[in-house]
Length: 86
Image (cartoon, rainbow, N blue to C red; front, top):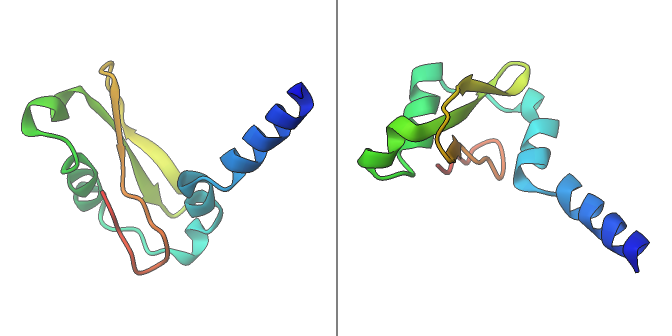
């Protein structure tokens, strides 16, 4: 049972939106860094944005562009090359 759980977790992690977007990052066009961060942060209420870390798409894939000690992390999800979702 434990082996099944570990295998299932590994499969689900490999198919997560972040993993899929990172694997196909070479086909995606990054937004300017300031736009990417602003769009990612727009998912949070204004009062929580200062406490958030941000991952942004770069030419090398997703990178941590803003580090925070707060409990929130923001990223722009891309389901496909023409889609951006904060």
